[in-house]
Structures are given as C-alpha cells and as structure tokens.
Image (cartoon, rainbow, N blue to C red):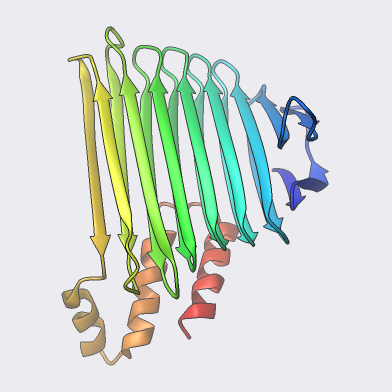
Amino acid sequence: MNRLYIENDTITKQELDGSIKLITEEKNDLFMVDRLLIEVVEDTELWIDYHALEKTKLEVLVQVNPHVKFMLYEVRSGKKMKIKYQYHLDEYADVQIHKFYCAKQVREFDIIHLNGMGSSINQIVKSIATEEEKYDMAIYHNAEKTTSKIVNHGVTMHDGSIIFNVTSVVPQNMKGCTVNQQSRIITNNQKECKISPNLLIDEYDVEANHSALIGKFQDEELFYLQSRGIPKEMAISLLTKGFLCSMITEENMRKIIEDKISEYWR
C-alpha cells in the first residue's frame, strides 16, 4: 500500500510506487496554502496519516484516470485544521474513501467532480468531535451513469459539535445517475449539531435518496445491553464502536478507531 505521512502541512515520509504521481506546491503569492497534487494512474491504495501540531491549511487535488480503481484511507489527529479536497474522476473510475478524524476543530470542503461516464465514488467519513467541526461537500454528476454514495457518521462529546452540509448536483440530460447521502450524528452533550442534505436534480432519469439523523443512541439499545449485565458506559462504548467502525474494511483503521473510543469510554 502507498503511504504518506504528513505533519502539519509537510510530508515527512512517503512510500509511493509508480501507480501514484505526487507533486507538492508550497505557499506562494498565487497559492496561499500548501497543495498536494495526486494523480492515480493505476489500480492502487493510499494511506494518509495526518497529524497537526498547530493550526494548518492544506489543499489536496486528486485526479483518477479512466478505468482506475482507487482506495484512499485517511486518519487525522491533532489541533485545528482546514483542508480542501478536489476530486476529478474520469470515465469508469471507481473511488472508495474511508476517513477517520479525531482532531480538534476541523473545517473541510470536499468538491467531487464525476467527469466521466460510469465513474463512481463511495466516501465514508467517521469522526469523534470534541470541539467544533464543519464539513461541506459538493458532488457534481457531470456525466451520465455516474454514482455517488456519501456516508457521514459523527459522535460528539465534551464541547464537540458537528455540521454536515452535503449537496449533490445532477444537471439536465445526465441520465442514469445514482445519488445517495447518509448522515448521522450521535450526541453526548448539549451542543447544537446540524445536517443539511441537499439534492439539486434537474433530470428525471435519476435514482436519488438521502437520510439525516441527529440524536442519542436509542434507549432500547442501551436497555438491552444493560439487561445483559453490561454497565451503561461500557454499553455506550460498544454501541459507539459499532457505529464508527461500520463500513470500515481496513483492519488497522478499525483498530485506531476502537483504541480512540477506548480512551474516551473506559
């Protein structure tokens, strides 16, 4: 698996083969943030381990070439960070993204362009929020028969709050597209959270749906576990692990999530 290790906005270590081309651009008068340009030329996987020791800003541009299958894993931790992602998918490109955030104050803007016929993206974001987090996501179906599935799962605690703004756009004549949004926030405090699922569709031949849910775990779930002799805090920990680890297929990422949950719910 290809790997990038980033501290603040600097790549401290990289392990890349010929399936990925990487260009870095440092801050200058034209680009006011550091930029990473990633071109995926062959079927591959990439793991990004990002740790912020101070306030940081970063822009990442990802180009996925035709008929390429790309799997991206990302783990973010540390202090306040702002990041902008832009994805460009050519025809029949297939992108799977799994992200886990356990950082303080996250601002993220994802722009996804499904430019080629048959291109598809499945992005799963998991987060434990202890301070303010905001995610803006815009998905543009610029070609026919494109597919997007956006899953956002967050858990709040301490002073944490989460905003998910997800907008999917299908213009007229972009036939045969599939659009799916699923967002859920589990709250463990009194902070306000928000989910805005937006479907801007100007074509009849589209399959589109969304779901949005904010709240605590159901009393019935907690009661069932407690009735089996499991203390309440442990029950919440088990439910949180099931919630945040669902759909995550990479074993190392699952372990990172489980270990972080164990730090908060002992």
